[in-house]
Image (tube, rainbow, N blue to C red; front, side, top):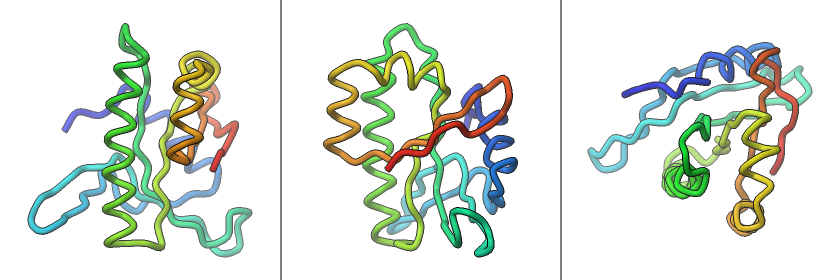
Length: 137
């Protein structure tokens, strides 16, 4: 399984934000069929996002077509969300993207509509600083 080129920056940003990475990558098994999310993480009860547990899919949106990238990301996110709800409902699926993607592709009307319609939770990361700059639900 190939890692997204922003994988390490996102992972480091989550660690800086107080998350403990518990799996990298994280395999979700459903009736013998594996699917692979990028990270599984937890935040200690004493932290700001107390006791939260997340499964993170990381996407760089670096291809020529941001819409193609988004279509693939949306499909993965929805599959992971349903499997997580079925198997480990205490975890929340998160789509991690760069600031550049958030202020670029994610400002397109159709992508904004789909993010809102499908309630995609985002973690937006400043790649240069390896810092989380925004969480959305």
